[in-house]
Image 1: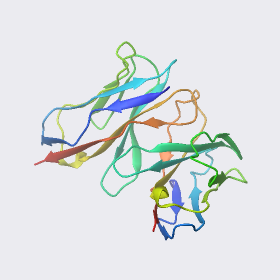
Image 2: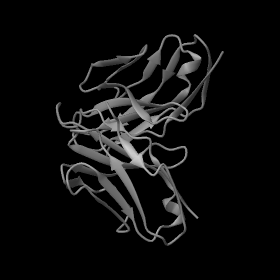
Image 3: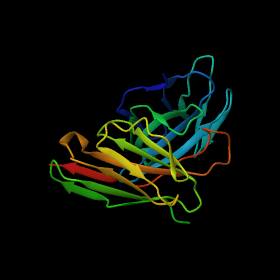
Length: 111
Length: 117
């Protein structure tokens, strides 16, 4: 079946540090891949997405590349800020309606 | 423009009671989704509507859960004979069908926090 696995949190970084949150997936065919973010007290919002292999999604300094050969979609940012503190969810949609989410990774950035 | 809205924001009920949760999608969005999020977990899919019909209800946990979207806009998630295990945040999302199936961005509402005592 379809599934998503994320690195466990919490992840604690200092401001301006480099961020990587690992995400791997299991799916048949050609799913679309997403990163959603949930800031404290707010709802889920799309951060970026990639709909085919080798595509790179990017937004707000975050990037993730759809790697079919390693079934991965790792989230990266070169220099995190305190305002990036949130819970990050990796998700896939395998040509159907539903999103399948990972368990989430909490990021805490300290000044 | 207005995003997805959900009412109530919080609902506390007693075990065995019936509850209804409402979702107002973004105007013009044809697809509507319900998810359930337990503490410390990612959202889990419940049901998906395309227009008025349920295109996929495979995530509904049992027959106590039911959802409707009679006019293709507002949707109501109904839970009968609530149990303590139903306590969670219930999320609604909507999307428009423009890209290929599965590539659409789903826009989420703020959720309804259901607590069953």
